[in-house]
Length: 250
Image (cartoon, rainbow, N blue to C red; front, top):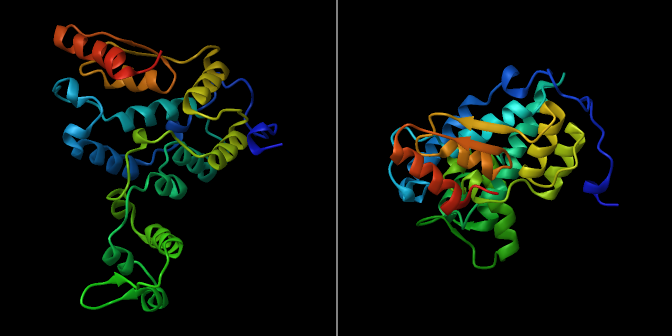
C-alpha cells in the first residue's frame, strides 16, 4: 500500500465549520512578500499580463495563499500547521528544490560550500569552476546542498514561481494528508475536500471588484467555484479572458 492510499491520521475533526483557520492564527508575511515581489518582477512573464495591463493586479501567489489560509484549519501545533501550509505553497525547503530551474553558476555554488567541498570539487582560481573529474551526479548533490544553505531571497533567484509547477510532490502530499486527515493528491482535490468539511460544498470565491481577474482566475485554477464582476467593461473583459482564454479551470 503506498503512502497516499493509507488512512490519514489527523487531530482535526471531519466537520470544520466554525473552526479557526490558519490565516486567523499566523501568516508567513516575509516569504509571501518575497514571492509576490518575484511574480511582479517577472513583467511580461506573468501569467495574466499578456491579456492587458491592469492597475493594482493582485499577485496570483498571494491569492492562492489567502484561499488556502482560509481553508486550512489551525491546530494546537502552530509549527506543524505552518510547515504544512508552506509545503502546499511549495515554499518549504523541498518545495523550493522542486522549483529549482536550470543550473546554478559554479561560483555561486562554491560560495555556499564547506571548505572541504570547495577543495575537493572546485578549481578556485581564477574563478571558481568544477573540477573536470567531478561527475554530473556529484555536481547535482553538491549544488542541492549549497542551495539549501542559501537565504530565501538567494534561492528565489533560481526558482520557478509556485504557479509554474504542479504543486507538492507525492512525499509532501503524504505528510499533508496525514496532518489534515485528507486524501488529496492535487490542490483542487484538497480545496474540494476541505471546502466540503468547512462549508458543506466546494468553496465559492466571489470578487465584486474583479479588475484584472487575478482573484477569480486563481480561485478557479485551484478548484473553487469562482465569480467575478466589475462595473468597468474593460475589467470584465479581462476577467472573462482570464477564465476562458488563459484557462482558470472548469
